[in-house]
Length: 304
Image (cartoon, rainbow, N blue to C red; front, side, top):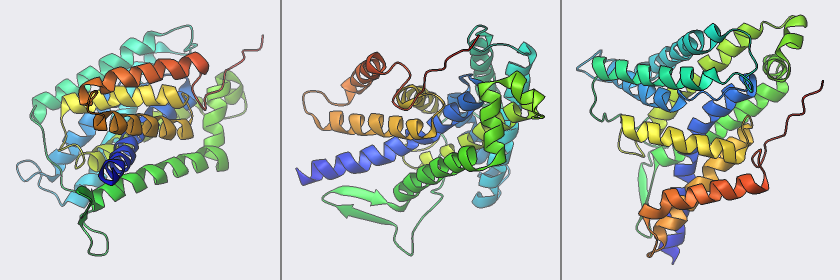
């Protein structure tokens, strides 16, 4: 019983943190543009493979810390490219009325993955643990449940990112400008805010976050792979909707709801892992029936 409870806690909080890290990217872009960037899951895979290419001796062979920093910078650039190619050509538009962004962001994600397949490869790639030890401690086994420094690092990074986004959006001029662009882009432009720059910044930050997420998630999931990353991106989108699109706290809560639900289901003998996706989508539909805008989401009222 103690082993099961500890396993549920460790699995739930680590997997939930991984989902939340990806969900933050969806939430950030939506909070600024009212657009769901369906390339976010693909960007997670690209960020992992690009960081691997910077670090691997068969490619550039850089020290891992430098490779990590360059991967973050590179993915920020990828986010900008996606905004320029997938969003900017649509011009000024109402995201709720013109949904062309669904096809353009989805297509951008496919194109970025195919470019990585051609240039770096298709096989799963292993990345070293970004945090090998904490004050000399590397790993412990408690009641047959392993807890490592990389697990602690993953949880702490998710919490730091959430707090950072909350402070950015609520305590800085940049955050207020991002919120203003989301609420009324023409009015924000009249107030002197460079709305185009704000949208580009949101995509760049989401791209950089994809690289950070890939590096900290990879040790938990056995490396970087296309199928797993894209599947995690889909799960993170569900978590974002559950918590409320545009809400950083909602993305975190949605990630933990799914993480702990998966962990609990896995410990039930007559359910097991094969029922995880089914139960998660039942949970997803149940929450949306009660709160269509998600747990922390707010309904938008258009004034005429």
